[in-house]
Image 1 (spheres, helix red, strand yellow):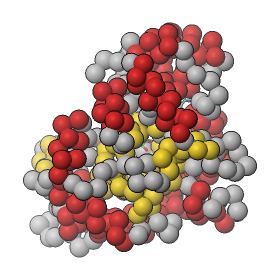
Image 2 (image 1 turned 135 degrees about the vertical axis):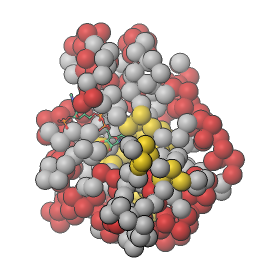
Image 3 (image 1 turned 45 degrees about the horizontal axis):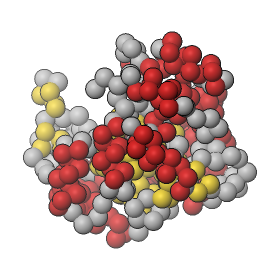
Image 4 (image 1 turned 120 degrees about the vertical axis):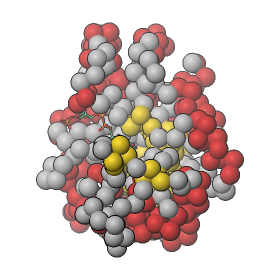
Length: 325
Ligand SMILES: NC(=O)c1ccc[n+]([C@@H]2O[C@H](COP(=O)([O-])OP(=O)(O)OC[C@H]3O[C@@H](n4cnc5c(N)ncnc54)[C@H](OP(=O)(O)O)[C@@H]3O)[C@@H](O)[C@H]2O)c1
């Protein structure tokens, strides 16, 4: 455990503070030499009308990393918010790190560039910092009108092909998809590529067969699912882990969520922090980049404010006790 904490702190101390008016989060140096801020704003379920304002609020609060995906349907709003902040003179394009993702229906190697191009146009931000394979599994590509017609554009594709509610998969190897992702780097329109939802065996297989190492693996990661073995596996190979759902997805109202636990409330009170801040700090101290989602201005600020305290080894042990997966 102490080794993992050390890795977390090495990430912290080797990172650099991006200059600017606000207090900004440090960045971690990726395996391709580029830098990625260690706190980002998640945007899944940030709906039309609220996403753009949330991203603007996040930039005002000091966030310089925004996570979206083609699936979320809000890439245009994210792009609009960033461009408006650039136009205001609050940031330059190179100050922000924009992440989006390849959806499961576009894994066929000849579809990867087409899907990327759609996200690139939606965001309309000169370049994308990081493009991820959203999941290590492929869905069959079918027309959203239910006909047998071949979809002519990305917009024509049914994102959740299913028969009686069961997903229809396609037999496409994520290694082949990854090779097409590698090809995207040649276009200059994306600077880094990575993966999401890959477990250790999937990482192992990918790394053994490809030439470019993913810069990050974005996975579910919070005290109830702390991912310590995967963080160690990735960090040992100079791959960052991005913690998604870092608050534990309180909107699913699961039982025993750390964020709602009296022990976490006590730790929070001892630091004059909130349970959300303690939960985020925990994964950060374990070496993960965290991307909490909120569309509420106050929470956006709260979730960013995790760098001015640290959890003691005893408190980290209490937090470790929530891990149940
Ligand atoms: N790669 C993947 O497969 C994948 C999967 C899931 C998520 N993600 C990414 O990770 C991001 C974060 O994950 P997530 O959205 O699933 O879950 P999360 O960040 O763990 O939780 C978000 C939920 O917590 C609430 N919340 C935010 N701040 C809070 C606070 N300080 N106190 C109490 N509640 C708070 C939010 O509500 P309000 O908005 O009302 O504040 C929202 O309902 C996503 O938005 C997405 O960008 C990636």
